[in-house]
Image 1: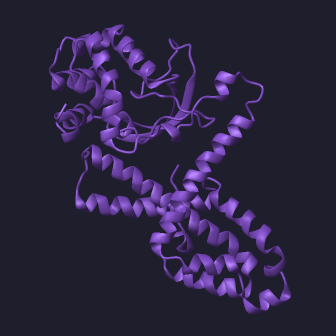
Image 2 (image 1 turned 90 degrees about the vertical axis):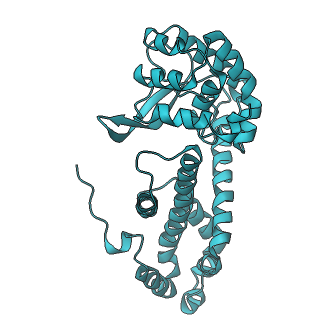
Image 3 (image 1 turned 180 degrees about the vertical axis):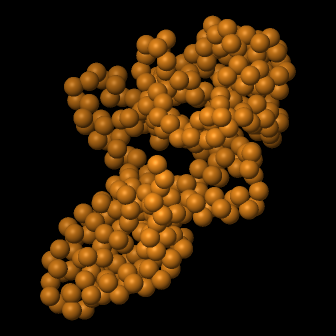
Length: 328
């Protein structure tokens, strides 16, 4: 089914709509609140998408890396962020509206306020510069993730204490590749010893799957899955699961799909299961025969069907050669 073409008001580059919004806000501030909140959420979502793009750039260029591609990706992300906000988004705009209505119900809804076209919420947003809005969006994303986790914990009163004490996915995010390498290198060495392969290749694969630990797979309640290798939960897996949206390549075309992934209690368990997963699977035996040759290991993994990304092996090889792993 083809997507509908956005109207002029829904197009991200239509700056005249901001002027129209200001006029409507002066006439009826209450009616304009929803659209202002959606505009703010679209900015926030666009920042998230931009950060995701940046993590991929840190890992290495893909099939279509070029200045022109980046420009069109930024345009697409801006349009997609605005469309997402219009269609409901992640609930940030609704939260802003609730906060505004609670704080301003008396003053904004009064005849005097309407006569002035006065709205503290609209005026405050209009006066923020881009740096300030980015800071607000970052703070909002952190608070949103924390609120999801708190709500999940409050709803888990009937579960065991072990379930409630699980850390959130946000709390296990690594701040930098240096921290990622420092904390996970011992686990990679142990798993590589069991498999008889290069530990740098093991750690590089974990870095590729998680964006150097910046984008961990989270379970539906917001808790961490500790899945560093993107191992999916098929019928052989009897443990906990994390169902998320993932990007798969089908006949060379990237498609967004829902998939269930294995969930663990720690990063150590993730490395242990990774070693067991490869050693017990016939399709990856050629990879295990590659020894310390990281490039051969990555190529054999891709040939065995570990990932659908056609550049999977090349990306692992680039990470192995990066400054963070080269010095190990």
